[in-house]
Length: 244
Image (cartoon, rainbow, N blue to C red; front, side, top):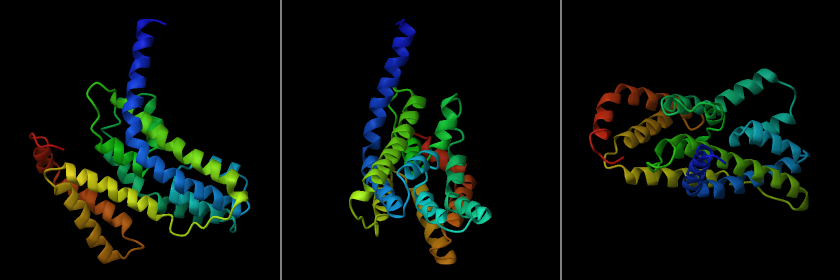
């Protein structure tokens, strides 16, 4: 093994060790909910192969739960497409946010784009990556680990689903609680709360105007527009020596 190979291997190992602790809370939420998803698919008459492949290829928790119901409904490709687009539309805004961050990632970039779920976005966007850790490999391992957590949980749930009855009512709150923890941690780290206040204010306003069923996309768009409009002053605040 030449020196270059040893260096690359050491770089990957260091990035993996740095990324792993960030994903532990995600594992707790993902595995529990994915296990329930696999059990639910089994209860609906599907082999474990369905939740395994759907979690591997779709990798969208909310959409996968909906897809289970759609598989038992009449064939409606246009309706299915529109539902999938609406449910996952928030990822459009995540993607726009990560355009600059994913520059120069080479072969990792397609997988980073595919595997960018809500939780992975939160970590890769806000984590303080140590200076001696390769940024690309760090984000790759965060994405890969979160993906594996979801796939393994769904697969095990599908295999074990026939052994016991599992009530999935209320399980979505696990993911909500995890988002609250991630947001609170990021909020406490910032000395200036402008971006957080923009997010909170925009969401509350859109919730009041559009209602709880339709507020997600408008709130994301409002946040994006405000952050774009005030990009320079906010950038000057956070780039002028303030702690992020």
